[in-house]
Image (cartoon, rainbow, N blue to C red; front, side, top):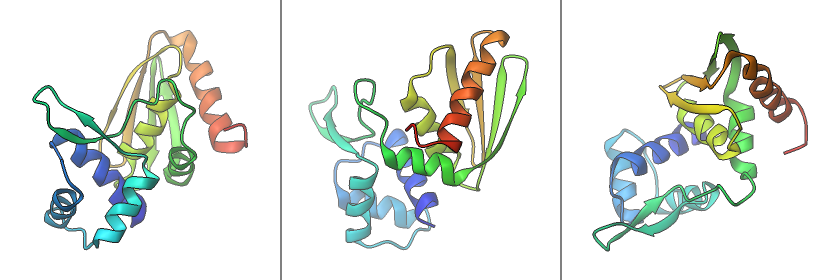
Length: 153
């Protein structure tokens, strides 16, 4: 339930201008999650959410800019715990996850900033990753294997 809820939080802050924990709490409740303020606060800390200033000058929650920081152990754990399998087809990689976890797994992959990865699209339990060229797919899948099977991260 926690992984699904945290995935929903990431989805909510990407699609809404969430300015307060109370607003996030209400949006989670509207989405069917029975949560307390303490739970929301803990999720914000674990997901390393930050408040950033928008163009209108108002502050809202964002997932932060991880380009210059090491990937969060939390995102690695989410990726490891939620990924069921992956398969390749030419320059595409399809990753299967537990229900409701593809977004969080996708955030983990995005924070890796892998060379040759053009982008990813996530549904509920499936992530599609586009690689620039078919010959670079083994590089990406080797990184997946390293994340899933070792302690390098």
